Image 1 (cartoon, one colour):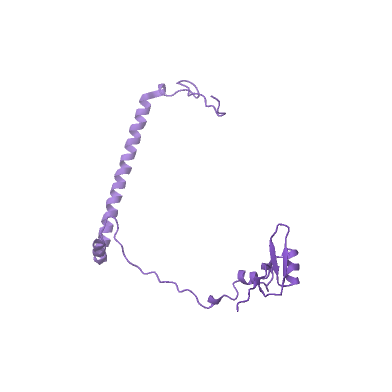
Image 2 (cartoon, helix red, strand yellow; image 1 turned 45 degrees about the horizontal axis):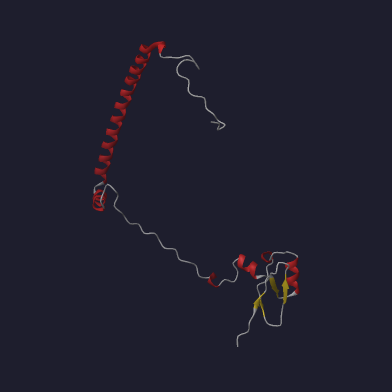
Length: 163
């Protein structure tokens, strides 16, 4: 035979028939209490989570859970290679298989080329700067306008949204 039990609203213990009290609040919410102690604490507005003997406290502090001993095993991450956009997996493997000295030489050659390119750029930059200065001198003061005057004035900005 199955016995119908209720749960205490405060302690979450089982209340068997003939035990406990029912409390109906003004808003119509029904609460079941296992004892006068539970009812008193409920009316004092003491949170069940703060009391060590309530189920709420046990749940918050992870006590009495069945799977406490069993820890999840984490999988070890395995390394594996994928092809990159510019290279297939075979090309990558070939490059790895190459002797490190060859790779080092290729790297050095690439760095030398990059440095040479950088120096060419640096040499070209001062020449361009000098040409720009000469052009500005040729223009003279006719190109410069006085501060705040001369030229077409931009339309005034209206910040207040008036049209």
